[in-house]
Image 1 (cartoon, rainbow, N blue to C red):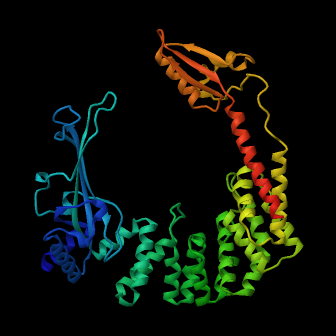
Image 2: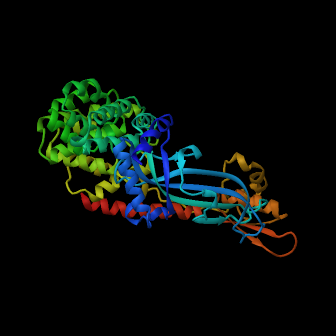
Image 3: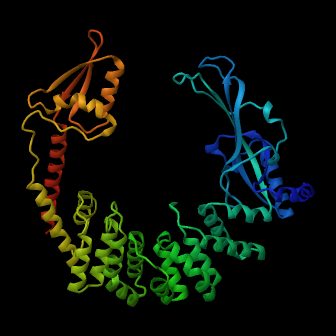
Length: 495
């Protein structure tokens, strides 16, 4: 087996996808693990993994899913036999990361699959008949879920990781960090290659921890490398690395490494970076580490916030509840000047949205344990804003006139309803039309915020859509007002 793998290595290396050897059985994707392999599949998998290791080829257990879609033999919702195949595909769906981390999803073709049986003769693991869909007849889909061993060479490995997502690269970097004592020179070079291509990536929206970058920098123990490559990485992924990892970096390379990063490598301060800085300062303070650094950075916070406000998007808050709580803990430990308090208060009160008042200020003020000078000013301002809302109690409508939604998509229907909506005395409109026109009008009303409800009266021909004016908007406003009064009462007890 080892000789066969060695002979096939040159053929595999030319591809950007792994070679897959199917096992003999199918499995439920949710329960697929090596310990649950059936009959001789387990022995076969172990033999393949060992042979690949001896041949110097990467190998991992995975689940390969094949699908076939087509039209049914009989146009019946109970039919489960495909008459004509319209589309089919096969891909690696799941990786079992007992050995190496996974490589993500791969679509395969026949050249990448070695099977000990004819897949066309096998029974599907799952069958689905879609049933009739409007004007379309039913489709049938077959699913096949095979246990398999995926194999790829060292040449392929570099090529695959070059095109992989950051999530996959970080998992591999974490693997190299964890197994560093066992790595060969080529593996160490691959880890350095991974870090290099990470530094060339644009920031993305994926949410995962880039802590392995700091682990790698610490394991390298090379200040020159930190300067040449590390700072660019750390600046790029500043807010994607947990605060405790920054503590480890400071403990290893000295707090001057983090000072260098903040002073010379982070060029702009957006909401996520300021939030992360507060999390780092909170972590350092809680662990009684780098007191001088924390004190200096606390004094500089208003300047960071001022820079952040220039980049703040319309839908972003200056601070969130969790960060405001951490800031209060820091201020309690590191008391600040009146100028600092006034500056921070001015910056944090620029946002006047109700969502900010409700989700950040009220939530924090009601839960917070320590009332610092900054928190006291925010508490008083929160009470003031809720008091204004209390003094503006919603008024019920004076009559049955209702505003017309400004929705250009349904302007014809709103034109029909305009006389009814503007009438101060008419509450009900009988809209007797054919079904298509009734459905169209009902859709218009349902997809608006108008104070209207509908009911179909199934008498006569055509039926009548009964359109009734409501006070829903007023009732919603009163519900919010009552909630605000309750919050205000609780806030006043905090003073």
